[in-house]
Image (cartoon, rainbow, N blue to C red; front, side, top):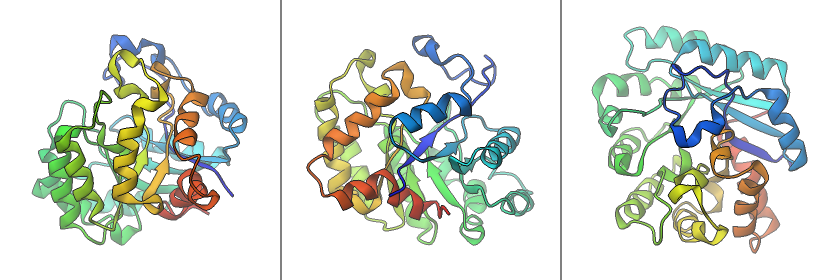
Length: 276
């Protein structure tokens, strides 16, 4: 089986582009390269990854596609183009010629969730399915209501929810977050990434058991056929090392069948992103 990390980033750090990195996460205010990451993958028996955008620029999308062309362990790219742009169709036509581009994502820093249901954005979104492109939903827990509306409006579009909708990992899951997860999962075209959890904990202090109630919610809602592991490296490094992130998910699913674990750690991501 091919193990896949469905969510990680590369960047050459500069303070302006990555101004979203707060002081308490200063450990990731530096460059993170394919060379850095390849060793971590091999140490954990993971054969490939999906490189996801972290900057809203076509320049970064170009860089990620070049990385994928140069490094065979980078199996695909989730890039960015301006879905609100009048020439979005032309830009999609240009980028979709590259077989490494698997999907599009829009970052949500300093935004409310209403952009997901705005007519201009949805016009661009409506063009993705025809190009065979997926859409990664990056949304905070308080934005998930708009995400529900969005996925219901596009039943032919393949969506994946990043970071389980960024719940606050503290005690029991919030009832509103749980309801929105259940609503999202009702749409069979929506998957969910088990990623980005360690950075949602209070002061980045956690024990594996803290995540169990949240993992139970998404597993009950999506089932093992629509869940995929993602590390969110290097963002995760502000709260855990790579091995610890892998172990959290492995530990939770340790009692599941080998087939179920293979789906979560690779097969689902391969199917979702149409990997070779």
